[in-house]
Length: 233
Ligand code: GLP
Image 1: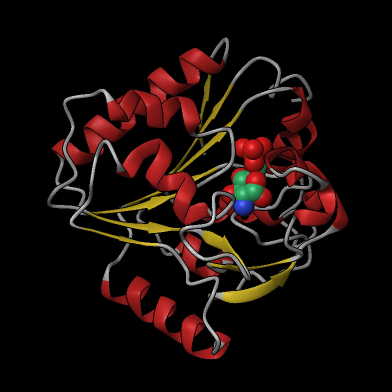
Image 2: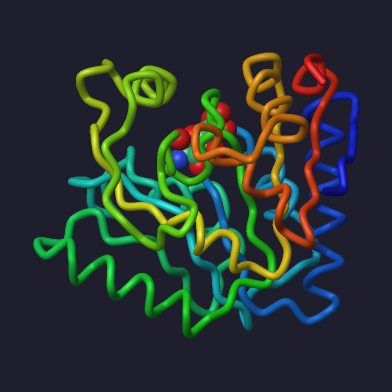
């Protein structure tokens, strides 16, 4: 694991931008993207950068079940708002949260990932060590699947909704094996609330109880952490 320690959120976004510039210059064609508040500063920098994604494909990690892409709380909407409206891709895939046939939506997403091997996968991390929406206990060999969100994840994400009862309790997420199939992985963690998950990811045992701990087994992982997120290392 290549650990890059930075001072704060601003520096984490600057470092991450460099990694994106480098990846695109070196011919990356498929970018795996993430939602949550952590990547927003990076997306702001990408939006005003010289980089263009016209020739690239993006594949997002996850989507809430029951929300369609027009819904302001959906991850599709989030991506359009923070990145795609400024930097459109040739094609941007986000799991279909509104499909009537979940099995078909899952299969379709696995096919998309198989047909577009991910060059650089961006990850945030949940306070319990989840990546994408792969909660603790998710098998390491999982591909795209439907997830029941833990109460702590629902509570953590409630800040984006009017009230906690509005937060969907299920999602469709790329699996851990899908994430691990990316050639390169970049995880960004900032803030004190991530310190424990970061310590368990980097120094703890590799266990399905801490989904991100599997990253220790990937051959090309970079983790950018600010001082607060590094405070328990
Ligand atoms: C959600 C997303 C994850 C994200 C996590 C942390 O659960 N599905 O991809 O990493 O939230 O979000 P934040 O960056 O807002 O702390």
